[in-house]
Amino acid sequence: MEQPKKRRSFPSAYTVIIIVLILVQALTFFIPSGKYSTLTYDGGKDQFMITDAHDKTKMEPATQATLDKYDIHIKVGKFRDGTIYRPAAIPNSYEQIEKPARGVTGTITQFLKSQVQGITESVDIMIFILILGGVIGIVNATGAMDAGMMRLSEKLKGKQKWLIVIVTTLIAIGGTTFGLAEETIAFYPILIPIFLLAGYDTLTAVASIYLGTAIGTMSSTINPFSTVIASNAAGINFTDGMPLRIIMWVAAIGISILYTIRYAEKVRLNPAASLVADQAASDRERFLGSEERKTSTDFTKRQKFSLIVFALGFVVMIYGVQQLGWYFTEIAVVFLAVTYILAFVSGLGEKKFIDSFVTGAADLLGVALIVGLARSVGIVMENSFISDTIMNFFSGAISGMNNVVFIWFMFLVYVILGFFIQSSSGLAVLSMPIMAPLADVVGIDRAMIVDAYNWGQGLIGLIAPTGLILVSLSVVNIGFDKWIKFVTKLLITIIVLILVLLAAGVLLS
Image (cartoon, rainbow, N blue to C red; front, side):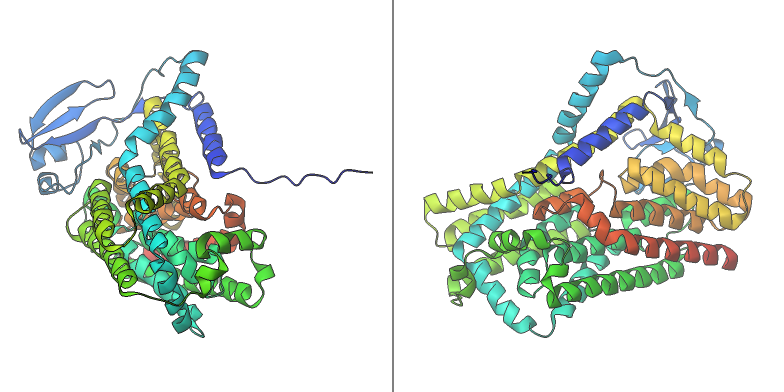
């Protein structure tokens, strides 16, 4: 009797990242190493430190004349007030340098060491994820989450579409204003049960949350970590070109919401149409629990208070990130404080409390590891000095083009650069002093370069394994192939929208 053929499954998130890491490692053998000279502000001495391609440094006065000397069109005050805090690349200063000698042993060492270093450099995010998982484990153990979700699901009947509209819109507002991105990891374990109770699947939840943050940050209007810092590095005000960015945000978010609703309603009416139908039962068991828990309608005062404390943690987190400039260390402290408060109000015994925290943290351990592994790709590029070489190649290829073709090609350049350089602020300060002056050559507004940067590096975030998407998918154990299948048509639609708006911006400017 012929044995049935085994169906090949798509590689896991870990394997995808390792494959990308190996490919980037291979590229370092073919792409020459090189560096731009950089200018860094030393606040203690009120001087600029100039570092050349061979790491030789010299100090110069922190004046506008010094910036003009190096053809950097940024106001000196932007360095002094901390807006530009990263080293700025000096135009026309690229030099090819000797490629770091590695050999077989060195390559293997770099491959392994970059992963450890990636985890080390991401430890603050990883700790936040683990503490968050622990808190969620505690809240789940109280039964508060289940009771609250049941009450909410009763109110959602007939209004399921609004769940997608509200979640995507609110997160997109956070993305366009203050760069809400990694912090959305905290929302998945909370919102996924609500989406399941509404009749949707886990992919709908991921789409609503991730498209909100990805499209929101891509269509940044006043985000200080992308639009503001890029505009300053380009020598313009961040309000330049604002109307086009607002149009982009409204159009892209509107398209994303309609796209998600179309898929979600198809799944609600026919669960077999779900791209993750094969894991529907396990998803419901994991996020909704047993039948006894799902049908329980008791909602005690202690459970309500536990949920209020938990929700207040998110309120404080959002306020701290937006108003106080917090990062993951401070956010982790907030949720650690929530943990201690829950120890007194949850009503769980000491043993159950600790076990629930550890179990919850363990559930998100894989997510935390993926964050660290994804960082290793950037580390390999940094240590091999190929990022500046890629930048120099594209800046040379762009000159002399028709202005519409130029801005389209600039968008493509930022799509490619965004794949390799995931830091929006880092890419802005590295590239804008070099790319923005090219706008003057072809006679277009420098704000268009900022748009090409925003939309290019933001668009690739929808599918780049080096970004946040694999982390998001790993929370719900959805394969990368299923996400690609879901998002492809939307991706093409957004690309067309971007090309139309870029051309309109150039022709109308």
